[in-house]
Amino acid sequence: MDIRLQDIIRLKKPHPCGSKEWDVLRTGIDFRIRCRGCGHEVMLPREKLEKRVRRIIRDGIEINPNK
Image (cartoon, rainbow, N blue to C red; front, side):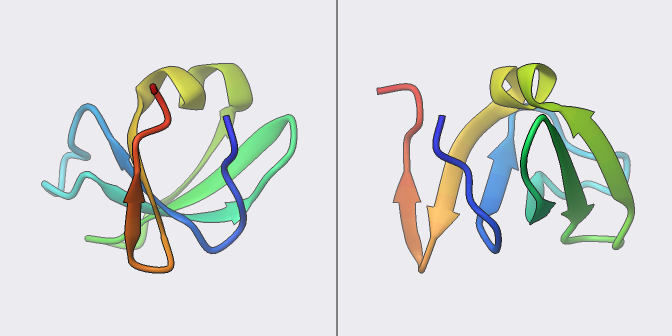
C-alpha cells in the first residue's frame, strides 16, 4: 500500500472524537498519524494500519487502496 507523508487517510472506524480522517506524520515500519478532529497522535505498526485504511486522500484526490 502506497501511503506517503502529508497524505490524509480515512479509516474504517471513527476515533472517539467522531473523526475518521487522520494526517500521516511518519512512515516506515511504524506510522505516526494525527487525528484531524482532536489532534491526538498515535503510532501504529504498518500491518495494523493497512488493514484499517478505507481511502487515501492525496492532493485532494481520493484513492481506493483496495483496488
